[in-house]
Image (cartoon, rainbow, N blue to C red; front, side, top):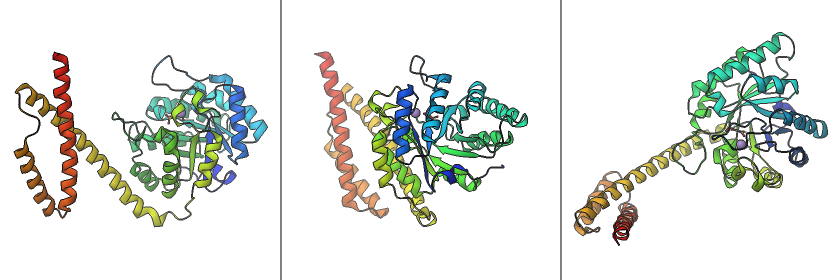
Length: 367
Ligand code: PEP
Ligand code: MN
């Protein structure tokens, strides 16, 4: 794949921040946010104009008219401007308005037809000399599903169109189970991407991974520790009134304090093994949580059975037997028996609580 390291790395700093609202909502909101961000030294402004929303009826972006607002941002601040494109029409409109950076959103990357449609517009415009091959930067977000080939495939389509300035954005992968993250980071996927395409610039979008303001700093730091080249962070002058993604948007002031706290790691090699070990820990913890969730579901099932056959919730002999057996298993696995006893007690206590809840709720129903 003919991909070069991004030029925006040169106009910004070593590690760069792209910031701006999830959506452009009005000229005033767009300009005020951009000016504040520019005063912090942010060189690239993002704002979504065409918003892919899960359900109809929510705010779907201001569309084409927002392109003028982005141009005003460029004129008044000198920032580079970036927006999301999802089809051929968006691409033509954004190119006509001389948007510097176009990103392909996670839902679009998952759709090869849409990516090809975008690539075809780019190719036609390069061939007809409407745009130069290195004038426009295309950033490709990972697909919503954890499929590295699909992600690379999307970048290949854009590269085949003749574009050289291509970068990747890691924004996490969607999951059915709601947990700490809005989108699971699965860090090993961007790491594998970097291994397969070493010259590729990869940046991280902590806003869509975390889905919550408090997670932006830790995720950003983790990304920098892992050697990502930059960050895309959603910032809004009044997050609580944002028309989309209000939980994860931060004010430019908050962004400033995060940027001051962030430590840019010059050498990534030292921390690579640590990162790998942490990734394994994260995965194991996720497995532990999944197991706990399954275990509690079975406890509740047992609770329903005990209720039906009028068996008391607490069975001391069964509990004793279980503790003795688990402790001897733990010793065999070189896990501290006292530690295991503590965990078993906590799990058992929670099981009993959940079973009692079943007993009580049934009682209430009959009352
Ligand atoms: C966005 O950047 O606002 C957006 C919609 O992102 P994603 O495609 O990652 O959901
Ligand atoms: Mn968003």
